[in-house]
Image 1 (cartoon, rainbow, N blue to C red):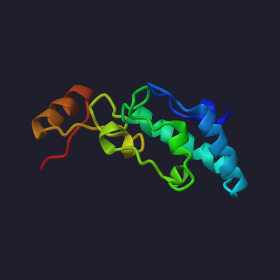
Image 2: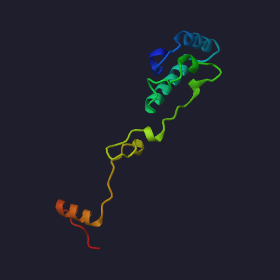
Image 3: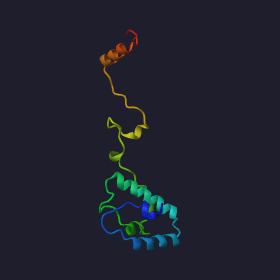
Image 4: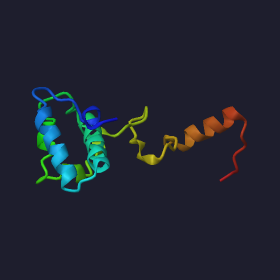
Length: 122
């Protein structure tokens, strides 16, 4: 996958001619293609997660490749509010552990009785 394919789509002019010139200038200055490509992929994921993909809020590729800004070095952290959630609305940050609802003593007793589990006396 090349830079153009990895970079998030935006509305309006992309500025690919300038972006190609800046890509080459960055390579000449010692920036690795893999660093710029990895940064573009992180930026694309961030844009997707924050709802910016396909809008005017995506930076033009030539602006993003500006060597004075080094945007390929940005971590682009995805905001907590946009992270995946399970059916109960619990963030996926629990490592895939199942969500267990909190039950009252009466609900636990009824479930135990229904399943045939014998509870110890209190």
